[in-house]
Amino acid sequence: MAMVRRLVPEDGEALRMLRLEALRLHPEAFGSSHAEESARPVETFAEWTTRGYIAGGFVDGRLDAMAGLSVPGSAKQMHKGMLWGVYVRESRRGGGLAEAVMDAVLGHAGTQVEQVHLSVAATNVRAFRFYRRLGFEPYGVEPRALKVNGGYVDELLMVKVLDRRTGRPSPGGPQSSHAI
Ligand SMILES: CC(C)(COP(=O)(O)OP(=O)(O)OC[C@H]1O[C@@H](n2cnc3c(N)ncnc32)[C@H](O)[C@@H]1OP(=O)(O)O)[C@@H](O)C(=O)NCCC(=O)NCCS
Image (cartoon, rainbow, N blue to C red; front, side, top):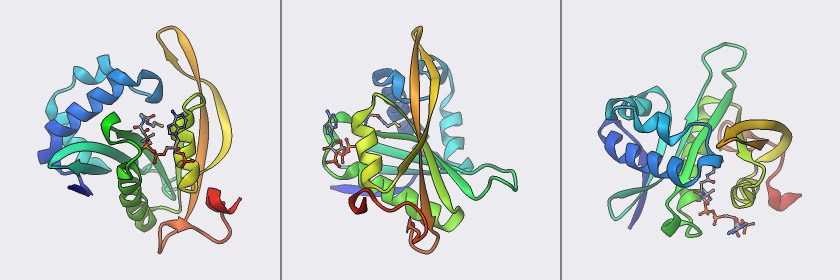
């Protein structure tokens, strides 16, 4: 049975395992590296759950999906949320768990910020289509955003403007991909 909830410090070890799997299997999809994060103690991962919002998707009690939101501390930027760490174990993809976790993050974002930003590797067609379906719109490209094993990765920049009451696109903002 699937369940989505906010992660808490007690989830630190499960978060560490999921995050390290993501970084090991998809080095081009994330800004951090397996080498850097595997050196961090479990307390670091536990602390992440209190510093920002991380939604976890559990199936039969195991953490199988995650998505995080961080909000800048500076006054001129705190209307923007940054989505990070979106990951679903391969065996759970295509089954709606990713969307359930994103619903939780965007619902929370709707109470905190006016828009949510993300970056996605330009070659990551699956993730790009997923984000489009959820109403994110591309607005630019960062060339050579990451350098992974000597090769460069361009990233697409995407944004979703929220109606703060619903977490859905505001009437004046970009509409969902279905409406384009
Ligand atoms: C990105 C991710 C969270 C999406 O979750 P998911 O369960 O795979 O998403 P869904 O299956 O609901 O949607 C994926 C979309 O890609 C499509 N798709 C499926 N397999 C695909 C493939 N091999 N190539 C391209 N598109 C594909 C699906 O049809 C769907 O598109 P649609 O909504 O237009 O029909 C998940 O694939 C994942 O964890 N990937 C590895 C890590 C990653 O890339 N994270 C994102 C970092 S920015």
